[in-house]
Length: 595
Ligand code: AMP
View 1 (cartoon, helix red, strand yellow):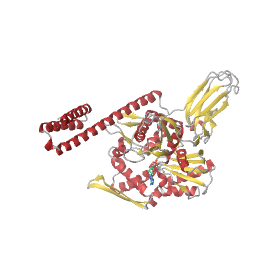
View 2 (cartoon, helix red, strand yellow; view 1 turned 90 degrees about the vertical axis):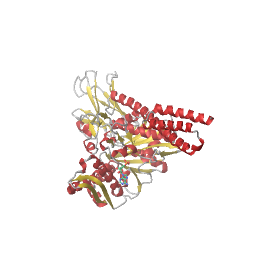
View 3 (cartoon, helix red, strand yellow; view 1 turned 45 degrees about the vertical axis):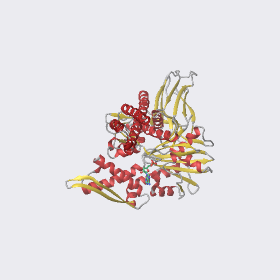
View 4 (cartoon, helix red, strand yellow; view 1 turned 135 degrees about the vertical axis):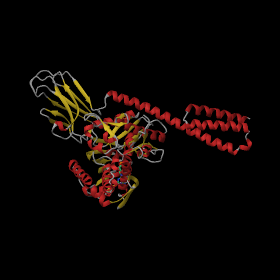
């Protein structure tokens, strides 16, 4: 196995890291930054753009830009009512179907969009490492369910990579943190990013990371704070100018960026100005927006969001039996932990002002993924990782109740069997409804799989023994197996949790991914050829100018003519022609030298 990369596939930004010269480091992209926006833009009639290139296009084509796709991974339409309102693009699908993003006449699955981001990260890594990358470790929020984890795995596959492990983001953060601090300690990782809040309590002991409890809120993140600013500013503008900026996609996009910028500024300043010139037009001409936002106002309009954070911290303390005080290390992860109110609330909730922020909050998850990637590739030793399940798993019992098989926070990998029986006499089959969730009522939980175990020998109720086995692998992915242990005949049905993507769709997407990568490579080769040819035109023109007195006029004319043709071919992007003209130029130059 070659070099494996670690990927933090974030809601807002993504990071790729790898072991280089004995250290796991975040890798820089061509523009010199170590995070890329998790964004894909589909320009009208052109090829898709990813990361910074996509973000640059966002202002001019907001409805063709896809961000926060992670919020839709492995989810059905009925589950994303809240998320749908936060994005300018259209998501479609029947309530019980996986959502898809509509872009013009094409529909894209969230897996496909995520794969485009992963392809970009793979390219960054390959450029930095200098060899092809096919192995990866990808992080997901601790609260991701089975379908969401599977969807992430599928995205990697579409991007031409094997996801060797899917790990929880807070676990990755602690792994990265453990590199600097190997002493025995109890830690709480608070990961507050653009879209989600994940809290984890863990024990760290000589390179062993044990997650003891996880908790969080999948509907709380930096985007929600941005939205509050957008709303107060847009409401104020509507009142004063009678223009609703939320109805103009381009103005809204500008306001969105300004709101996020203002929020970031308020992390270090008490007050900030939001200024958007020419943001709208009324009968007197163009109108400009200017709004002064204080930290106090901001914290006031976001009070309930901050309270949700406080509640989450308190709930984690209860679930995890987590103590308080200065002996607990608090590890801050994600951009939103830079907000002073967030730090204040965390310090209050855990009764400590010793918040640990020495690990770069934007890169720590990506680095942790890289650590695990290096460990799995056998390049790093002495790091052991023990993770826990984030969801309660069970089966529906007679009467619509739930029989819990794997409680939340069970260490994984884990395998457990339970024996059930038939509720009625002479029953030859039983339905097995595999559930995920905390409700005691089956219909209020999420069905991961539903199947019928057939061929049970007729007997009085309670006599047959049906053994149900739950197997959870190190990635948190579940397989369920039911067998009639009573007859000895093993009739087995195994269900594998899936993202909900059909086999056909899956195969098609993997194939399209392959073609897309070939396309990208060809396009890049074309750009390189054009750049090279352009360089030849510039340098040769200079050379001709410089050496005018020494060059025969017939030869100079011939070269000028050739360069003119080459420029035209570059403008028209005619690859074959460019190659032919370059070869001819080489010939002419060689002849001149010989002459
Ligand atoms: P992440 O998902 O960790 O990349 O976090 C991104 C989120 O953090 C976005 O909502 C950013 O607006 C937010 N963020 C980044 N820097 C700051 C800051 N200095 N203050 C407040 N929020 C920030």
